[in-house]
Image (cartoon, rainbow, N blue to C red; front, side, top):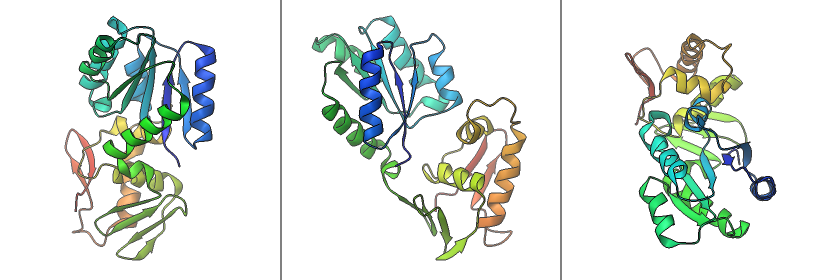
Length: 228
């Protein structure tokens, strides 16, 4: 499983507990403390889900959820908020602000893992599958192999990661900055034009001919894998 989870929490003990539980389940875990520029930081290297610890449903929890939902790169990002408060009205306030699930911090790690998996299965089931299929394209994450019309396609590691990212949301247009973040994180030394180079190599590898627009360019917006 290569699902990337970002945990945002200031309590070191809880952070350790969550990190250990998630990694035991096979998730790749990154951690950040609460930060005023959290949404911008997350958008630079988009995870597959965020677990956001908040002491109460106050302005930070609510405003952060709203920022996630109104920022293009994070608008569909699965968000689980953990609150100290057990009050229903507090959880409802956070859910109304855009969180997908809201639990108290005393929740057992087992329940959290079950809820997270159910959330991912509902919002992006492809994340939990070892094989992605879009039209006549098949990508096996575990075997690191790609086939088009049952014929194996040889791709470099960067092109493989790029195709995997595009196959998770066929038809959706991704900006160059978003694609760069998916490949190289927040490494500012990598120019966005590098994305064009790797898109070109990927097209060459998986296309059946010049007329085969398997990856389309959207002028001024970015690239999208054709939704067969």
